[in-house]
Structures are given as structure tokens and as C-alpha cells.
Image (cartoon, rainbow, N blue to C red; front, side, top):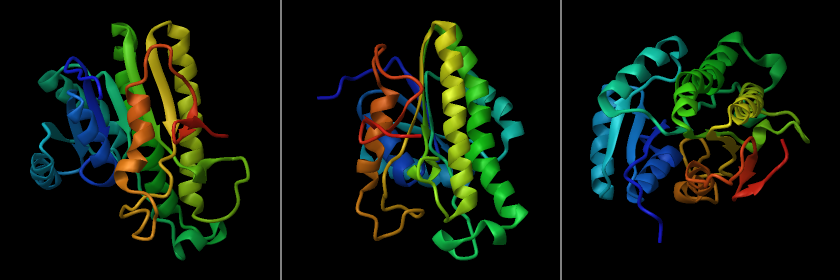
Length: 243
């Protein structure tokens, strides 16, 4: 049975559907106070009803991770309303490579696709980390989980959806840098990345073998890892994988 902990406040970005929804639901089921980051008030209203149907108390908050410059102010307002955030799950991401989807070629890619992908998948997580981790260090506790992908592994990287691959490789680098800085502080702050596997979501498609709940398991583990747990690692199915 999961241990209940209503003393911690978690923020999960992109939590109105898919893996983010599953992460937020499970953390709330464990007794945590959970904020679900969504992009608009309309999505917040729909998310409120969806969480209610799951029987969990999750509070949607409007947080557009594509607006990196506005993130510090937005997170400041959220903290004033709800208190300091102890656990951050950077789940929100987009995959808009084209033309050709998986077969999209770097040589055919437009600047717009790279720019939009970078804003959401890299600048957004970077901004949330820079806004929240200093407070975690000051309070002596924090957990950050960056939802990455095997698509970002440099080991064996090949062609296919180049903008997405580049963004996830950058997110992995961001994870290692932030984790090293957190470790140097001496505080109990753990920053890790994980791959959910191929999951049945709007991004993964209906043919994917994993449910959102299964894809959420490693992120939940890292979000709740003990003080002697890993820092600066990349995981899938709770096992370390190559960068």
C-alpha cells in the first residue's frame, strides 16, 4: 500500500490528459496535494471534472510551458495561492515533426517546427527548474522528474522526428546539469529523467502497447524516491538506461 503524504505539494505539467493525468491522479491518491498544470482556463475546467470522476483531489492551474518568460511570474502566483512546490514533474511536451511524422527528415525541417518544439520541450522545463529548484534547495527538499524519451538517447541515435529527438537530448543534458548543481548544494534534492515507453496517448497513438498508468509508473517512483535514491539518472521501468 502506498504511503500517504499530505505534507508535500506536487506540480505536474501537461496533466489534463495521458501520462500527466495518470501521474497527477496517482500522486493525489497517495495523499499528496497536487496541482495539474494546463494551458488554458477551458482545459482547467475540463480537467477538474476529469479528476473528480477519478475520485481524487487535484487542483488544475493555468501554466503555459511554451511561455518560458512568463513562467517565473506564473509560478510565483501559484506559490502564493498554494504554497511552495516540493515536487515538479515536467511532463508537458509536443511532437509536431513534419512532414512525414516519424519519417520526417532534418533536411526538410522548418525553423518554426524546431522553435515551437524547443519552446515547449526544453525552454519550458528549464524555466520551471530555474524558478522552483532554488526554493527546494533552500528548504532542504525537492524532487524533479523530467519526462524524456528513448528518442533522445545519443547512444544509437538515428533518423526520425529530428526536432523531437533534439529536444529530448537537450532535456537529458538539462537533467544532468541541474542534478549536479543540486547535489553540490548538499540539500535533499533529486533531479532525474525517465522514459515512459511507448504509451497509448495522443502522441503515442492507439497502437502503443502501454497504458498511461503504466507509462506513469517510473515518474511516480522518481517523484517519491527516498533520500538515498538516485540523482541525475535516466530511467525506464525503474531501471537505469543509457543516455
